[in-house]
Image 1 (cartoon, rainbow, N blue to C red):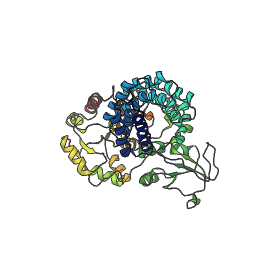
Image 2 (cartoon, rainbow, N blue to C red; image 1 turned 90 degrees about the vertical axis):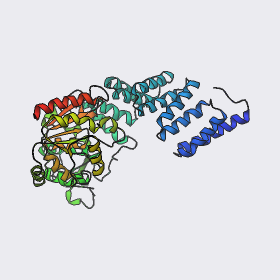
Image 3 (tube, rainbow, N blue to C red; image 1 turned 30 degrees about the vertical axis):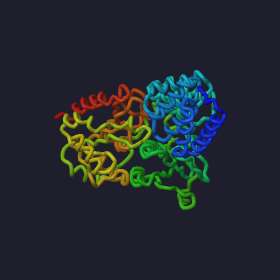
Image 4 (cartoon, rainbow, N blue to C red; image 1 turned 90 degrees about the horizontal axis):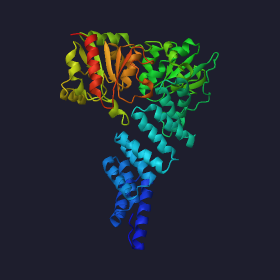
Length: 464
């Protein structure tokens, strides 16, 4: 890397980079950017300034510009391991997985003892379907930094994906040590449950993560009851009515308060995602799953059913999840052959603004009924009645698929190439939900093959 000949200019550059980095680390990216650029105006070949400006732009969402800047920095200083590692982060965010893998491997060649880089390499390997190799990377991460909770949780989810439930659930408890885990661990005067009987008292099971997770883990509540445990279930308020109807022997609350709810006589508590570690430690244990385990309002269900003539197919095709949503969502226009191939009424089970959904359906020429009286984001009990009226639900990986299958409705789940841990590998049935059939991408991004298989299945189930 060339350096300006003047010591005074070199000092100006160092000061500018230091000042910009201070702002950068404080999250003041818009203020840091022009100062990095001032340094580069004095020395266009300053690799550190190029790299740091690239990272500021990446953190601002300007991934393409960031990639080019860090490539320039690498061209100037190709032995800087951090440049390759951060380029890998940018490429991974862009979905350029093979290139990200190559960048991480180069960073590790230059500096092998980097736990975060081993962890990120594991993520891109898993996203490419190389689960065994991903496990090697996660285990290497833990060997270097045993207390890195992100690695412990990633290893557990890879084990669960492979069907190693005994090992997977044990490591799943690492999730509570992850920075910014979506559900914080709750603290109560009562201890965490360890599987013991609680004579004359109740176990509090509280929901965690998203609506779909709460629904899935609630499938273990009937087994708790069969095992002789009295329990209370604390859930998202939108699920309270549905859960209270579905589990008549359970006290269902939302926002448990130890003082206000003393009458519940709680002796221990447990997050719902920890229940499988007690009851689902092998694939065979899933044979005890009750199906269905949720019950929709029968009057509302029948009203939906009676107002729609013919066979009803519900469809959900999109999720707004910023991290995994693009891989899980499907362009509505791709469903056109399905709409034309069966004699059925198609019902939108997609959340979102009604006008926007109608406009999307119009652009795709999709013959979807979008019911203005149902808002699944605010009234899940009403939405459950609508779902329960369906003859079949076809859904991407979102809460609609969980709800439909838990209600006992035949559910066809459309999965991306690299699925979430709960769906395992290769199987066309879900151990969590007996009514569910799974259609998987054979390669990343290939929804056409998935929908061809769905169309063939539909023509067999719903002949014209």
